[in-house]
Length: 390
Image 1 (cartoon, rainbow, N blue to C red):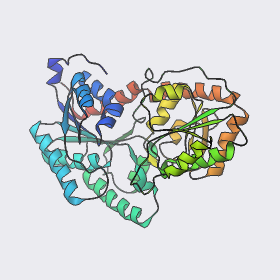
Image 2 (spheres, rainbow, N blue to C red):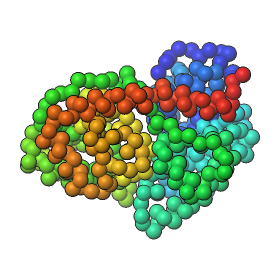
Image 3 (spheres, one colour):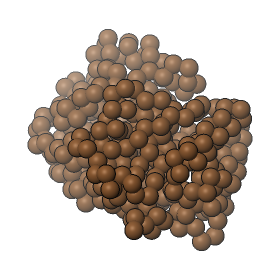
Image 4 (cartoon, one colour):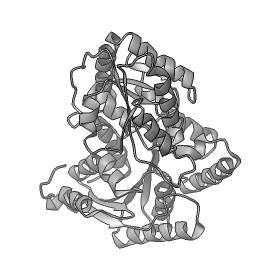
């Protein structure tokens, strides 16, 4: 991030409130966008439930103003959600916000409603629909019906609604969430910094190194990956299967960590919690695997792997399919199909010479479509349309 002092004249431009559910997400996924907004002449306020001191300092260094508001990230508690709405409305009034830019479900719903009530415009970004729209349980269906109603009510006066994949946009239209004539667009995920995740030459190793990096939840496909690794390791003893991700205690879909630890002890996999040096980990691996059936926007982990120049194995599902042309830069498989996953990984292990070409195609795709500068410029065009700087 740039650490130069912000220009005084630019800081007094139209006022944007960017609303996220986590300070780490706001900085990691939207930091470059916020910098671009400031550079374009907007005064930017960055809102999250709480700021770790180093992240607060990072926002202040780039010229943004960090603001806190209460948020229960999971569950539907009317009292907690009302507190979120009222707090966001207070921020809109107190800082005389001209446009609210929220992303993720609750910030989009309550940020859009606060903008409407507070006399500001709202430009929302739908970053994936998550477990609620992927699960098939009765409870999930009931929650989904409520979320659809909330979205429909919250987004009705938005100046625009942006999506990270075309499937989510089509579903919103099918469900009647978007009012007739609302401006929409599909942007290429959150983008990836091509310099932060630079191209590296392929390893050329025949015993490939696979990496799964995500929260350890069943819908992310970690269980499928573990099963595939267990089946493949006896056939391909030189293959390596890395698992990077934090346990999710309390989640009903959390993977059994005893299983992870047992497979690691047996030498089937290598396990580590999520690491800050993820770029170095990816640079020393060959194939990124994400067999997710979660309703992703476009997973940032896949974009990072593309930028490094890795072959990708992922599912033919919304958000994931955007990152792979099957057979060109990786393999697309059906969701929840461990046999298909095993076959896809085995096909690469049997012909590892294909992996280098796939990695080059991944990097070319990252440069052509997912460069964070291109993504931010596309978002900024919508901001400029809704709120000119002068």
